Length: 280
Ligand code: NAI
Ligand code: 15L
Image (cartoon, rainbow, N blue to C red; front, side, top):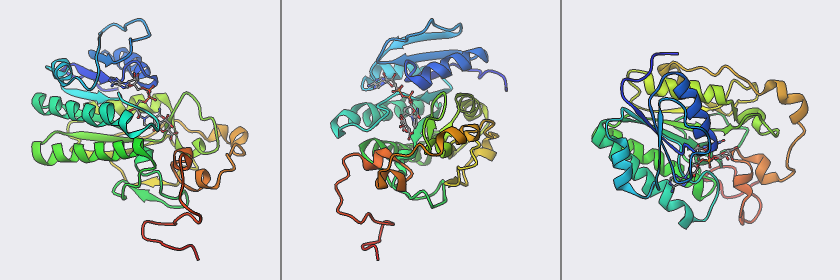
């Protein structure tokens, strides 16, 4: 692993599943971290880290927390499908506060985007990072908007970003879909290290999946430019998980899985593409 960044790194969402893992992994690399979350940090504070409890809606505190930081690893926010009004504060206003702080500090943003920003692409497709957004709910919509916000701050203010379109980042894959979408914790930690320490990243997208044989969906991203390659794989779980499917045709048809099926009220047949109006 490369040396620790010269400046502290702000890690939001530090009390969540990925934040806790990253807090441990990055301090183990000698990084100085400022951790923040609306919930208390549940673990013993690692050496090299401080924790401040804050709401992403509180722009003044976010600005203060980012002072002197060289990068913001933004994991905080609502991480699943919720009503619009629940999402808009943490995921939209909160992200605006992150970008304003990054702009002032000339800091880089590593943004935890999601596969749900493109969730209505069909699983039989292979899409590149420049594919059209097809969000599968208000959560995915907030991630697509977040990436667009990052582009705005890059083109207008020169704020660098890496958008991590994370698939399914859990300790282990738990169903057939995750044989495609699973990202191991160590692969994510190594990816974040590269995102922060690579000299220049511009404004780029990396699909967040491990080296899974079934990951035929996502291609053509910035991984080589930032020097990251996945090392882990969901393949050893194929035997036990390949039959673990939902039986729901909407869930199994689209990349976003059950997020697509949630509150789905379109009359059948489902569209096969943005401009397709009939199925025959
Ligand atoms: P998580 O729900 O465990 O962590 C999110 C954290 O954000 C929580 O600790 C929560 O307290 C905090 N948070 C929520 N509202 C907040 C607010 N108003 N102010 C401050 N903090 C707030 O989710 P997880 O799995 O750790 O995900 C981290 C990030 O990665 C999220 O942004 C999620 O959308 C994204 N992601 C995760 C994936 C996964 O498979 N785990 C897949 C795709 C994206
Ligand atoms: C996400 O964006 C969620 O945060 C996570 O909980 C999973 O649902 C993941 O996507 C997924 O698609 O598996």
